[in-house]
Length: 446
Image 1 (spheres, one colour):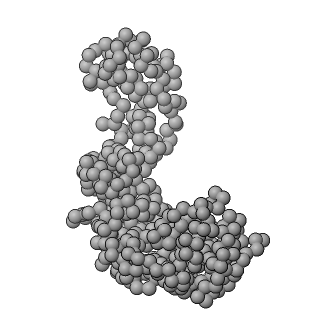
Image 2 (tube, helix red, strand yellow):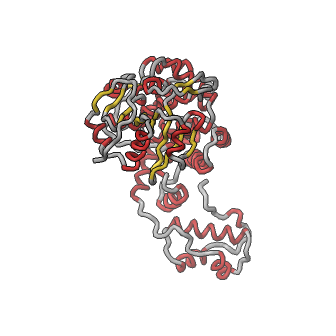
Image 3 (cartoon, helix red, strand yellow):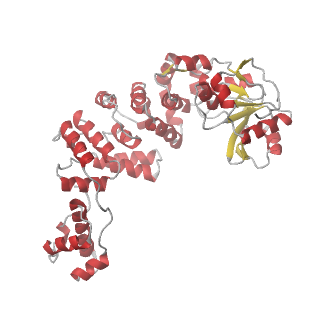
């Protein structure tokens, strides 16, 4: 077992580690143990804080470990000269140790928050008690002294863990007005914690409802960063319903008199929708160009924006129920065909989109079943290239050749062809000598 050097004591009464905390402490990597001892050797106090303590208290092994210390940033940089000055203005550096990175912050209290995001000033008061009181939620305001095998909980985070309550430290109105991102973090924690039946504390819910407008002051990147995590969690659809009820999503997406009854009914069915499909469902009322502009406004990545736009377009298509078409449909839609069809089914079920009014929810269920039974194509890549086709037809390189190549590729996918001789047989039957190639089938869904 690692021998730890005792660092400075805290100004908070400690409690013996719980069994799950002890298990976590006994398994921390030697790279972290080395950092803890180096800080203690240099007359410092050091504590594991935040989410790692919360997770350990709940019996989960933390993926990220943050530290707090009573040493000033300058002293830390002397001890760890290769550390990264992550947020030096706020007393935060990131210490390297082996392949690990540990974010380490000097104990502090925060000044006024004038932008609903960051304090204008910080004061290094070197009090663990004061440092824990500046944090967002009680479940994140605990600390562990590894050497003394004690944990500190001045804000009763353990009680809220037992009761599965997300509660602000101190005054909820003050905490939310200090940093509007805490609104979204509250919902994110509802989904991030791997146990069921967590709720927002009643007063916190009221404060969020009354202050949801503050979200507009946040950078788009920060909003999407949190919203992505919410939409990606297992409890996403229940959480999103709560966010609708609290007027948070209407603020994020600038909804104007949007009827949400059908939307919440669709969400409460808890279909297994990924974050892309959920984003489309939440903005079902937009036109294609509007949803593209929303992605741009929220500064989503190109890949996410492309996937959302594609999902929006494909979810408005009613597939034909025949094997040839379904092979083609699956090929063009890709791996997310199931999520897209579930989305189409919801649109049909709740009459959310008029385009799908001619197909019943049961029809989409049938299509899903047929696709699940369909064997994978023997090959997905084109069996022929342009050179082969020019040799076979004497068509010169150009648009006509490209359209004929696409037509044959579509035939290949629809009929599950596996060799060139089969392509030749189909080519012999096609009227490829005609010049009306603009009317030939293309590699796209209509």
